[in-house]
Length: 436
Image (tube, rainbow, N blue to C red; front, side):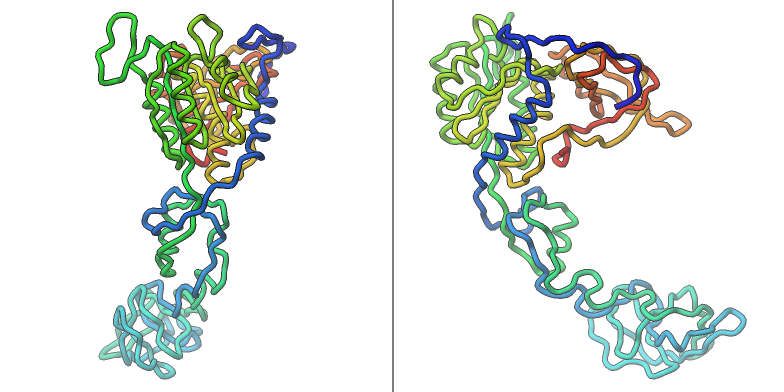
């Protein structure tokens, strides 16, 4: 990521069960890639175009007609034969007779004869016989229906020709494309009002722990409100999936098993937060060993925040146990869950390190343990000289306000033991659905 001088030999990592070798990120990506390859194809459904924003196209979409269907002006001015303006200048203008006008929303009747022109506004249909539009700014009125053209125009100038935007049969959108506002505008211009999209993946979310209560309750001493559920519901929905709240289960195995069974039966992917560390009340591993097959694939990732992640599979269904601390849960979701959600939604993107969205100058030294990948939230600022800088927003993994104050993340690679102030660093936006 930069030329920092911080280096050490990789230190051994212990997973959350005390075993040596917590999975490095590259190994986790390999596991995710295998899960992604095994995912069944999502169902296909047809939706109205005005309901398709953010959905993923299920089939390649071809243009049913040309756009525009008739040449149009892209300027206010006069429709002309370009040859009638050749050689025109301010000292030796070309003289044209104004013999008609193009009315907006109507097909012109006939067209001007040689050395004649029609008035035309932006968007007007080009009359027959014309091949260009002279901009209004390049003309001077010279009396009744007489016009001086003081600058020539080339054939095709200031017009959009038939099919210039879209040709008949042209590929508009590929399969697996996330529908954007500009896509919907183009589809409207071609009269395409329904399209085939992949069904939204259903994601079940469970919060665990005797210490958490719903946000609407006032927590008594020793308890806290559940922040993870609200955050994860929003993260899932922001990726174009359907999030289902399966509520809070305490540290009781029977309740956890019942909710997990229901979520596995009804959903394409299941998340639970909390219960992933090794402790008396942490049931995640025991429940997954009972309910999933082939079962747990990863427990413990050499990433901070987010080390106590569990990745499991129930048939083709991915299951993630995310840390209970909100920052760790958010980072784990962004880095590890989203590639699977993209695949479940029809976007077969490769599982790999994310793409940066900007480069900035780091504003302070950062230390990191060798052999571990660190994700650090940063606040972006611009100096008076116009340089983009990244100021780390430091805090504990339970302090969600660090993410609220941050604009993005930087990643310290596992082979480094830190980054130097003044280094150029890549900045990542984990909130974007096009992160990968």
